[in-house]
Length: 344
Image 1 (cartoon, rainbow, N blue to C red):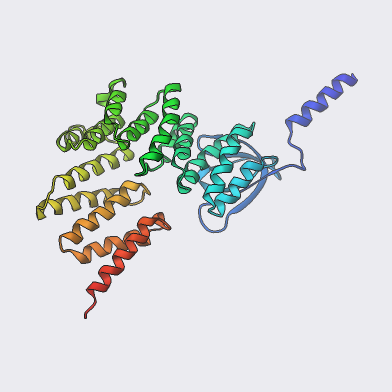
Image 2 (spheres, helix red, strand yellow; image 1 turned 180 degrees about the horizontal axis):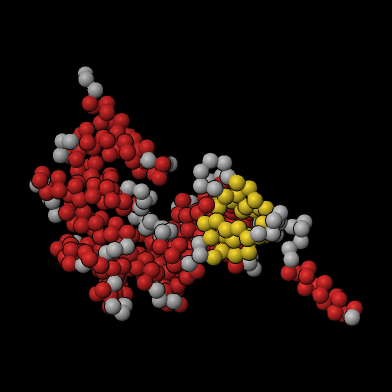
């Protein structure tokens, strides 16, 4: 009986979190964050789930709404969360990466991967951000769709990122990772590799993500007619907003590249870029930012300084682009045009 009693006591002790130990969660999407104490149980369906300390009830909130977590016994995660809140991106990225390796808890790994994509990107550590993205794609494809990091212009960074993405794709071939790997190949001036990825994909001629990749591969080789043709012939397949955004941006790029010095065609290209902005201004995608800046440049070159200044001002003041070099450059361009417009 004593042995049974001791066993029962052990099971109870391990099944019910100690009242003295608790995780602290701050959550909210606006204003002051709400503080809660309890035991985080898991990440499920894009939500952090915890057992409330005072009521014992289960509570969940979307990961994007979780401002910060302080978890009992998770030093690396806690350091990362503090650094993320303070916008110390290098420190946050380093510690999220540590937490993924060090923690035994799946929810800690899920939270860390989710945050690492953005932290590493903001820290300028694209290879680490790309690695985190493919990990997130394996854990939660729906979340990963909205978290794909922007591919930088620096080919050295792209080249360092590719091996981790290739390994992830070899382990589990998904359209999401295939699409990302194809984009990396294209950005690294390896369109042939991107086309081989397409050739090995079942149903590629009906898959919107892969059709977009095919168009971008053609765009990268300056085959603008082929790129436009792929998009225009398959418009009905682009029902996902992410694919619609990329398709519209690709058409705008083709329009700008073939405009030459023709004022009417350059005006059409500016309109094509603004079509991207009109439909997707709520997204923080680099394609939206690029569309604003390229439209502004086309308008300025075409003698429409007032309209160009308005677009530069929009970029400079948009919270989504706050702190970026693009926002600083846009402000400088706005100030220059505004000064030129003042009466002498």
